[in-house]
Image (cartoon, rainbow, N blue to C red):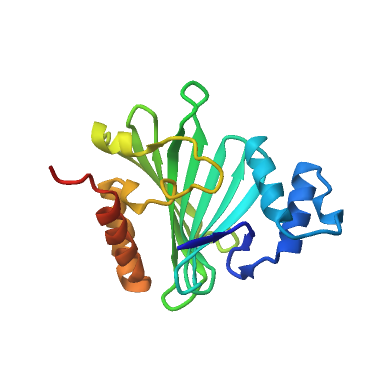
Length: 221
């Protein structure tokens, strides 16, 4: 995989360097987009934003240049949208920084289910975790305009200590996000529910998951 420091308009396209610079200037009150010399400027602006815990973006591509995921970073926050072939997001990771340890915690994993064969969202499920191992899910479905909208919250047994440890990640250095995008972090119950959907609509996800399992599993003694 390879990475570019350009934002992705989820469901649409990868933005240009110029458009991304304008976004950074707008969020961070900088003036990079006004400079005449542009070579290497976006990476410089992104690096500065990382050091200052301000807004910046990155898009990770597969080896065939198809989109894999889009990242947004802000003060103590990393959000990663995992993307399909049409730049639609089917899965979201939301990390938050713990003020005591300085580490990131994968607080929410969101699955977006679309109507079959479309990119129109049908169901959203938030799998939520706490620092103590608490686990709950919140399902959103229906539409408010026709009275079908509902939210269904379910409390689940706590996850194991081993799985809880997998939700903690060291705060990344600039440009080093492999640990953030690891799919093997997803706890078992959420993983099974995600696979139930992706096996039908996005089977490549299982290949990505297996790749991460093999890559990050501890070496055998």
